[in-house]
Length: 440
Image 1: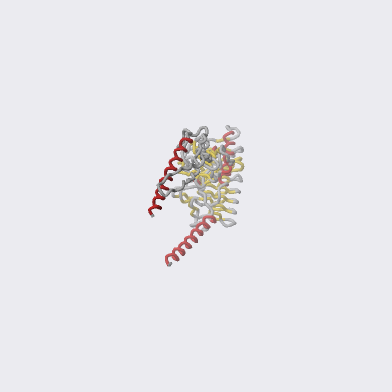
Image 2: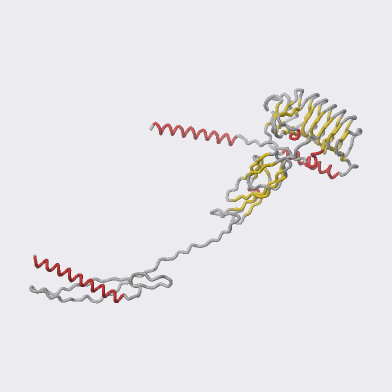
């Protein structure tokens, strides 16, 4: 009894623990890792703008330069300059399109940390973690952001996105430091208002700001200043260098649905995921190098088949890859399961009925009176009524075999023999009985 009570208490405790875990899993949101855009044609540009202003000599751009309205003082460009008089403008325009697509891609990713409303100094904030230190993630502000004199450190491999609702400024002599595998290739600044970098500051990462980007004197920037719809202004002795980045792998998932067994789902009924990242069928996405599991939900009743660059649900991506995986979902047979490569032939079960036997009564001749002569005393004749013998009469059913002992239908002969045998047996039994009676 004590053991049963202990088991009941343990069961209740286990139930409560499981319930807490379940509720925690429901309430706690899942966090997706930040990923960088591919940038497309914009990847080679150090400065991409509508208007480019360079107020003094000495600016160096280690990368491509693109603009429609040029500066008074030409910078030193270690790359290609795209202007209205230096075509092809198609590359410049394509870079602008890809800049917009990259911004949309960055803005579509969910925040992993959101600061309290108002202006934030990233160098002194501690609400996100250790002061001035940031790990990979998506940091969102509801107000302007700045980098103070203490600077900030980005620590670890992965993507960093600073989504700022307002302007971004850095003070003079501020520094952005990369450590433990952090790269300016995976650092992104996307303020909704202008960016202003203080004199002698050291800045890192790609900035997308059509509201404008302004350099102070002697700024050293490793990254890209992308403002295709706005103005970029450099001053004395500024340097911007496009980082040498491994091209992030690109993966496209193409989904098809086959309804040949009575089901009716469509592509939109199957949410797709690469790792923890939600993706849309037939849309290319950029990921960090590594192994990913491709999955889908709501696939009950359908059998998935992987194809293209995916031989299974797991794919390994390396820098520079551009892969396409296909998932074909063939609906299973309703009420059972099927395979898209198997044909089914329905064969009805044929049940052979048992032989049909009809029993009919057979008339037997009138009982036979047998006179029996016995020594004195004389015994009157004994009349032995014969029992009515009912024997099976067989009716042959076409296609069925004959059964029973009377396969040749010689019933008349067999009935006579059986009747005679019964009479003889009764006679001897009666005689034995009478003899016992006389002796007694």
